[in-house]
Amino acid sequence: MHARDVPRAAVYLLANAVAGLLTLLVSALLFAAGGVLAVVVVGLPLLAGLALIGLPVAAAERRLQRLVDGRPLPHRHRVPPEPGLASWLRTRYTEPGTWRELGFAGLLMTVLWPVDLLAVVLGVSVPPAVLATPVLFGTIGDAEQVNVLKAVPVTSWPQALLAGAVGLIAVVACAYGLVLLARLRAALARLVLTPRRDLDQAVVELTRSRVRLVDAFEAERTRIERDLHDGAQQRLVALSVMLGLARLDAPDGPLADQLSRAHDEAGRALVELRELIRGIHPPVLTDFGLDAAIADLADRCPVPLEVSFAVPQRFSAAVESAAYFVVAEALANLARHSGAGRGTIAGSYAARTLTVEVADDGRGGADLGGGTGRGTGLVGLADRVSVVGGRLSLSSPPGGPTRLIVEIPCRPCG
Image 1 (cartoon, rainbow, N blue to C red):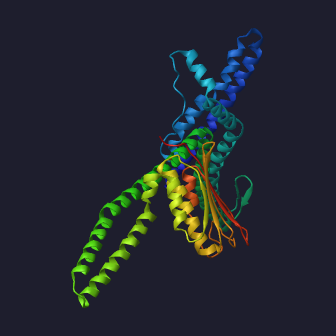
Image 2 (cartoon, helix red, strand yellow):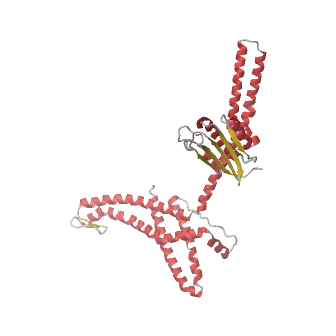
Image 3 (tube, rainbow, N blue to C red):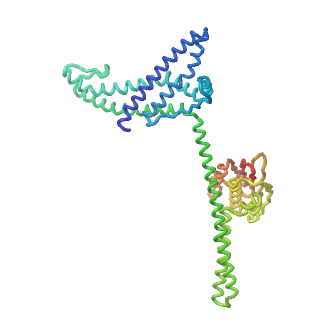
């Protein structure tokens, strides 16, 4: 807290107290005049004008906000579509901001302004009065007494000095109290006057940014996969061929054995690179779609699987990638931890929703949070599915069976 914050807080609270009192007086006057003149129709516009009393009150509050946080609070009123009073009134009466500001005006003139005024009066007057006790006591002599705040008598110097110390503490406490109250009042005003759509827009923008990040991540994965596939993998293939030819041309002996081992190592490196490429972003998914990619996963799974995946449509890269990697992780867990003898993969697209289910007859006990200690590998995949608007659910009671279902609302591409 800076020293300049205290007078700013006092001015803010005092200005709001005056604004609240004036709003109460003007509202009462308009209501009384409108009620009396309503019988001759003249009072009806006055009563209707009461709904707009929040506009100047909110405008003043927005300007006063700079005393607390250094900047005014911007308004969110719509611009009338046409010039003229009628268009302006129609716009104001039909927008939510007008009624929000009316509610703030009602809160200010009934509850807030007395609190603001009382806080300023007490915070500004009480500490100096208590702090000045030793001075007042010294000016009237030791034989007399001083009544602190007209309530507490002080008849000796020790009492006067104690009152002065209490006054010093009160100065600091009231200064902090005024600043804190002003900040709370400003926060309440922002909460009432700020349209909820600002928060909704922030949530929408956050969701869109998550989607953009996922799309950028998928594009980068695809680029890395292509670079490895067209670069390092091709070089390894060429190296393996050259080593194989060199082995055929070399006479039997230590050199031939070395070439043979080098050829085998190059083959193993090529296999590992292909697995790495498939884990980053499988080419079959990009080239042939989710149906073929799931079939490829099932063929490489050591546990027998029954596949009924009839989804010939193509979807966005983010949707296909999310579904593919959930299935890949589910099959990895099935092979490593489930102890299952058989499993099933089912996929369908209906009602604009892609549904993928992986089930097995294993021991169960799987957990999306990895609570079993074995680790399911599904942590984070649920977040990836949620980014594309989907939902991942898991049922795996102890003893089995285990069923993992992914549902992603989407539309086919092309």
